[in-house]
Image (cartoon, rainbow, N blue to C red; front, side, top):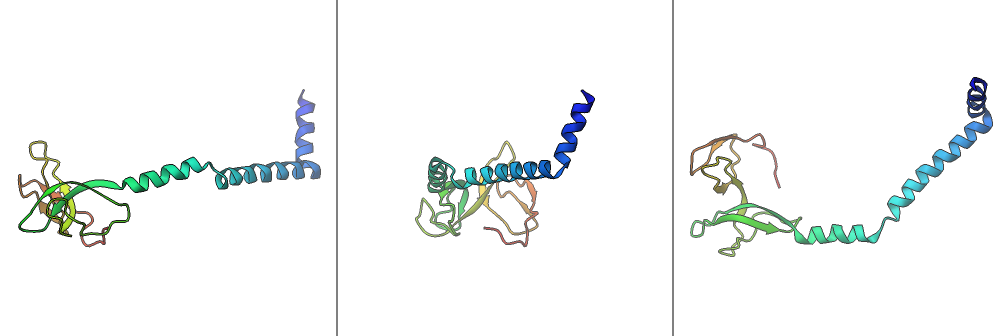
Length: 134
């Protein structure tokens, strides 16, 4: 038995074995690429369906007469300010939902490094302060 294992090892390490191993590797990689290129169209349809649904996130309207807050659904490529669903003006900005269990209200995001919830005064640290955000 020990000599059989040695014979296979010698064959794989020999010139013919190296060619066979190389061909098998190329066929496996080629098969994986072909499966990726020719994947089912159902997956692409699912991607398009998710894109059309858009995304939901908290918003706060900056219009002083409106001031609405809530959850808004926008397209994946939407730019801000978005149209407010209440006053229909392009003044809805990305909002922030307070994590305080007794509050949970939505307010406009801040670019300050430290900011407070205007309703319960909970302190937040903005690690994204000064960086470009969508």
